Image 1 (spheres, rainbow, N blue to C red):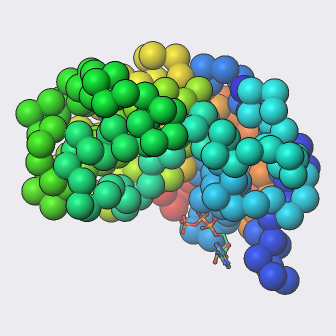
Image 2 (image 1 turned 180 degrees about the horizontal axis):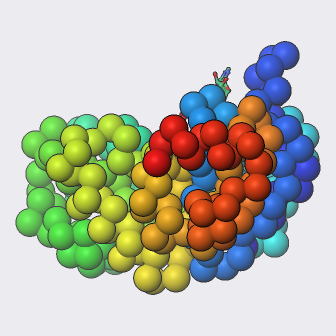
Length: 240
Ligand SMILES: Nc1ncnc2c1ncn2[C@@H]1O[C@H](COP(=O)(O)OP(=O)(O)OP(=O)(O)O)[C@@H](O)[C@H]1O
């Protein structure tokens, strides 16, 4: 579903991703972990072109999204993203947040977009909040709306950039539970996370980045119990 070939990303003279190659199969769930500043968010953001790679290629569903001919809006339609700070539209209701892009970008009628939105709000347990504005919601509820909003575009791939980092501890579980339910639907997911227990439980693979290098790419049982590199061992000693 996603193939990354020799990806390099620089910000001016600073090379933050260094020759990264990996693949994510359809239905796979990949956790991206590593120390602060190692390039995790930048890697994720390259997959929907929020960051434009400096070199290398990224294929999503067989399409080279790094080709100059590629339509960025089409890519983003197929690759949903959930951010740490929710990024909901503050002046739209929950329903308005969910129906905006499906109507504007996918050209759905209001009735069709509303039906998809209501199904999703039921799935994330927030149907009764459809007419509320984001400012009236808790952080956990906002993040569940953000997940539903991304899903309303019916993407093939979902990207999560530290989706629970900005939440109070008691709200982390409700968001992780929604994500676990999503995993069971078989959608392809890439998740930058500091939640090691969650990564261990739901991911098919762990990508460990350090200093812009993809240092390890392994199943969670292997990575967490017997990391190959010193760098991953040191990291795990600090976080587990
Ligand atoms: N837009 C930008 N302009 C310049 N430098 C950037 C930009 N975005 C990221 N960087 C730098 O790239 C490096 C990698 O950042 P990135 O946010 O990808 O790391 P991360 O592993 O996600 O970190 P964290 O866990 O702290 O979020 C850092 O040195 C960061 O300062």
